Length: 71
Picture 1 (tube, helix red, strand yellow):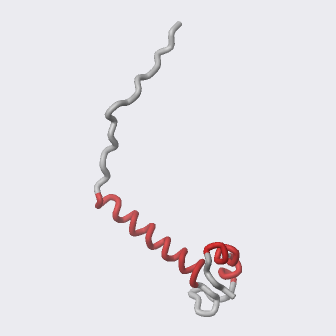
Picture 2: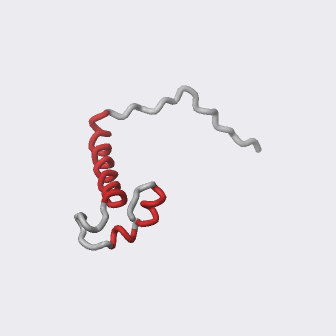
């Protein structure tokens, strides 16, 4: 009994994705990244959109790892 080995795909090129389909997802990802940058890097608890120091304490070690001063 012989097993058929599939031939390698040659010349298979992925179809290009139109910019108008990528743009909404790229904008959404950019906004999410800016919000995360604010929460990790800028939010100090004093001038924060979320009152209290909960976010600051939650991301404290990450701030130091990324090089943001917080003390």
